[in-house]
Image (tube, rainbow, N blue to C red; front, side, top):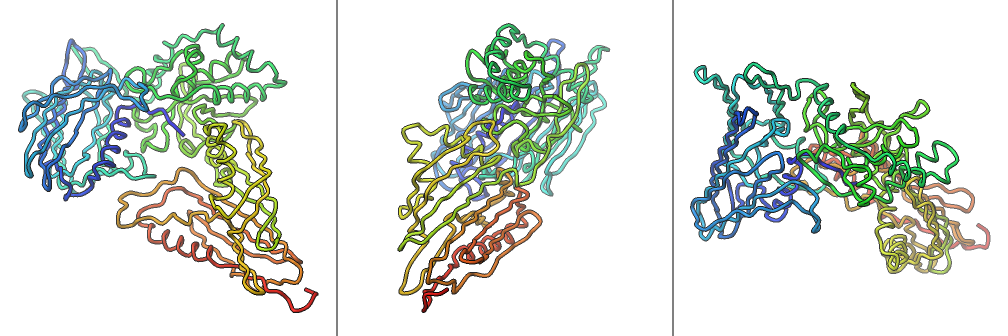
Length: 626
């Protein structure tokens, strides 16, 4: 699922991740290192407004080979790059560009690139940047880690006595020293953080959000006292809500246009629930998600009529549209702020960094529904892992409601295969049906919808055959591949040569063509972070074999089970009359695997793999009777 992130920090780490992936900077032996860096942030006044003036000086050195390093600084409508100076090499000019993805400009975030050529080993180049944060509300965090290995980095924050700010420390380790100095004469505090010998940030697939991992300061800018007048930023949660509400009150939805569209969408509906589903699914299926982030645009939704006109929007625009359409039909729909599971914070910290997403909350017939139209193929009442269990702030007039998105078990995401097979010569043949619920349904239907029509049949066929050239799927029937269906199913006829081998009077059988988690071994030597699967999983494979006449089961593997707090693996065999039933069940109850559990996980996966490789043996009987 794509999520609308509203802080510059998230985009910053996207680019850091891309650079890390390309440069593979993850230890002191990397070519480019930061020998020394100093960051100074100072709260000051410009035209009687509080701003934060920042100065960064970074001393880079290459240790192993010549080459080029691209460094950068992000900014947006609420910040500016005021000056860039490079020493140690001549003729360097920074490049400024808009943030874009796939050629689409979708953000007010901007990037200042500085390309540094290191033409000899041991070359030293310094980069100095001056930056202004125009609004303390958007100055939310300072990360101590860098894309390169750090020998030493010093962060200083100068806070005058008239500024009320709090710094919360996250993920600090033993290589960070902190001090606070008080300047009685100038009446300011200087907070100093020094980090030494710190490995480079490393991007890994399926890692938690950066706020869970890297040492940083969460900055809570509360208020300022200027010339006897108090300026309140976010002292309390009410201040945060009031600011959110002041933003959404600037949104002028065209009621006539929205009402007309709502009538068109629900024209064939017979009851309220059908109307709700129709409106929700229309936005899911007809409005393309494109992020638009940062600055005021990071929090102000686009007008509902504009999202309708353009046929695309970010999470705010899409949530505003579905809310407006529901309101047009008299439903109690409200905008709702939420931080996804990418974020380590909750509403105990009143800051813009707490939220990175907006959805719609619907109160209807004593039930509460949470509508996230950026999730295209998940029906009303179901929620993706990214928001399950997360705190939310619901619009409620002058007040607000704090609630949580419900959390569900892995059974919500069941992906199942049911199949009944017969042996025809050297082929396993029978009827099969795959069903998909929850996140597994979201994935399979998304894949179907985004596959060109002329390729769809071949893609589905290849999927059902597990890309095995020895197997053939035919008579394929796809059902309920829409946003509001609870289950999507694919039924078909399967002929498998891959799972059967005949030697003399014996058949050797591998009934399960899908070896769930078989390749999920974690590289313990290379992986640095916890592993976060995208969602809880429940895979069920039930295959029934009709035992042919004149054959008997001479060997079946032992039943197998591994039961842990966060996951369960089970494989069982059952014989009844002339039928043999094989069933495997993989249940990932919690998607987070901690580093300290990697060895145990790998050991259990190896046991699962060995069991997958065991075969059933049928032996021909000596008489005509079984």
